[in-house]
Length: 145
Ligand code: FES
Image 1 (cartoon, rainbow, N blue to C red):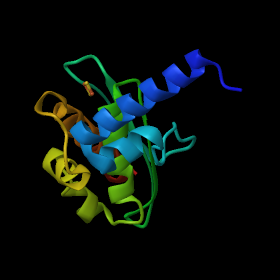
Image 2 (cartoon, protein in one colour):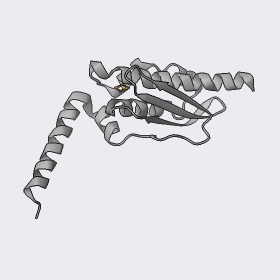
Image 3 (cartoon, rainbow, N blue to C red):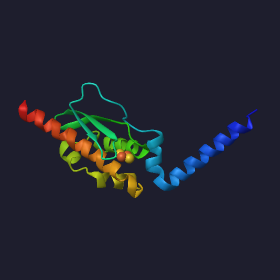
Image 4 (tube, rainbow, N blue to C red):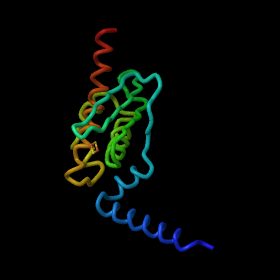
């Protein structure tokens, strides 16, 4: 038999999830709960690492072959929105060529996620800028090679 405290905690968690869904929408909520491609990548072709003005770090790792992003992962120590944005960036670029990835900005991430409160929209820009930093690093490596 479940004790009343467990029941209370379950109901409270359900309520928090429900409110989060309402404010952030399904796309953000799902990635916050189950982010895709999260984790640092060993032997990445390039990495973009940035710290936002809020102090959160965002890292985007790319494995590139023939100017195509074969694999992308992210790491962040930031909030749930940063996790959702990092996840969305890696989803948007996996399997895409670099020209396509170079077009992705904060607005692209925000549109793909559907909703983020105004005070957390910078998370999308941070994730997109980290992607662009990773692409930039790759270009520099290619020039020097
Ligand atoms: Fe700053 Fe999410 S990146 S709060």
